[in-house]
Length: 342
View (spheres, rainbow, N blue to C red):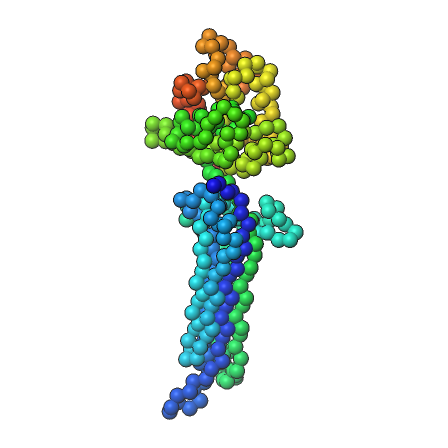
């Protein structure tokens, strides 16, 4: 099961209290203060793990806490520090603090874990209290006070997973995104001849044969009004926010140029409504399913759509393999260009 949102609570450990103690030993009169300080409380740390692909396990355990620090003891013995708790999350997890006033994606951003092994301390452990030995001075040689340990931190966190990919595949339902992904990578998304076959995002890696590769993300198809919650795509548009290039697929099953232009504009409008930055990403427009078009009409259809959109349009057939390498090469070039300009 795929889960890309979760809300959890975390609590760090409180610090141990300092100790009030005086050295009592035979033949050592007036041994003086020897109370040790309390140990620091444990912290709660989130760690990015590339072996995880969903927030499901984290969501099933909504509360994570660290250990309290132990109290200080006589003989200048410092209390043991509390054990910290490390919670593994998928690479690409955005962490926000949830308050009564700011919920979900409106919460204050704490961090973005985009590299394997990256760590983020979300609840710092409380500092241990100082023992009376610390307060001894030439003018105050018999201190009888010590500090209480500092309390830990408790907070609610909203975790949002945004998959990391070079290329994001977008289009209306049944535009051929899943079929394309299955042909150019080892990914196995569900493929069928009805809308919304894809119910969750899929990642695939395409090998280009020259020791380079592309990571592609396929999300559920977009429909008009997706930014208002219609259909499924709005739930997963976050996964292509990180992509450097968008490949926009138009199905050649609809051969009328004006309808293909309308389909393009529908998806473009939803991207703009969701995020202006997303709509401005470099993109390729690809006419898919060319195998359903008579061979002598393919060139004319591609030329007509290209003219209507005033941009280059590439054509592919995931069934026959026609044009797949050209699309991957063009996408790779755009990714390289985006990397250079960033």
